[in-house]
Image (cartoon, rainbow, N blue to C red; front, top):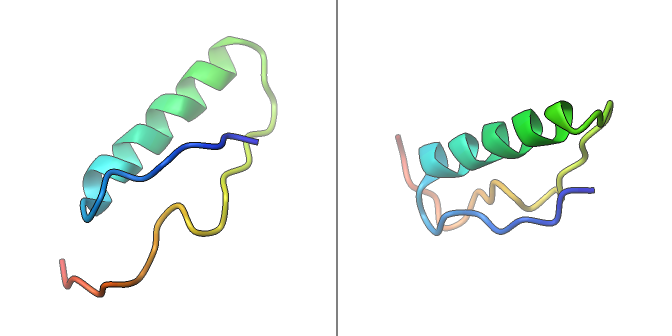
Amino acid sequence: MAQISPVWLNKQATLDKVEEYISKAGSEGCELVIFGEELLPSFPFIKD
């Protein structure tokens, strides 16, 4: 379980952070990475 916080109000930066953690976990031999369901919140709604 990757317990990380989002980059506040920055969807792309949060996705970049997720990719970084997945890559790091894979390089350490992890086969499954799980993130909390509220990592990419939908509120406040900001249209991309």
